[in-house]
Image (cartoon, rainbow, N blue to C red):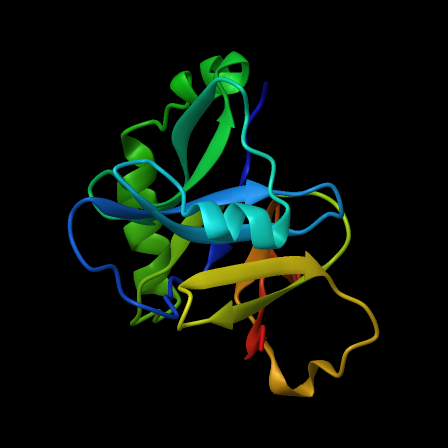
Length: 178
């Protein structure tokens, strides 16, 4: 499996309470994914039930988005079937990438952090947040008014004349699930 990344604007819509919590993504059969708080790698059963999420029979928690420093720092995780774990274990980044990353951000006067997330293919998605339940719900974008949302993820293509960024809209943020 060849893994590729998009660039995203790291942000959180709610805080984690302690070191035993992390944000983990699960999916349902409607194309919706829910990023919710897992405590000690265990999901909240009410979130699983309310969103009809699929939990793999042999689950494994793997990082899918990263802050970029001197290494990749896991930021958000996905719950995948252990059978798919091997692809994530082979994920490697050449050491010179981190120096190049810093140089590109400096050259383009980017004064805020950007992260990398595993590239998702498919139709544009919208992300809604419920800070009370501490969930981010990402679902297919219908004909919603996008004027109150902002693009938080971009696809980057390497071209001979430089890098070309394309907003992919896989993480258009704004709104609430309520």
